[in-house]
Image (cartoon, rainbow, N blue to C red; front, side, top):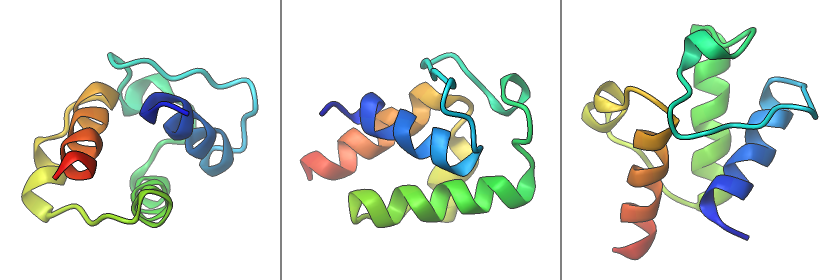
Length: 78
């Protein structure tokens, strides 16, 4: 399974929407219910699923789902 496929499953779970289809250009403004609390839930779920940790600096630099995917792939390759 690719990173975006796994990530899509996580988004569906966190936002309780099985019809959700993420793409690299998506931001919090594109998803109903993506607020500060759901963002924390999203990041902790991603960290647990991929067995990695984001730094505060990495999180602040992420502007869209594509940035999130790139950071995940970079960490998994390291």
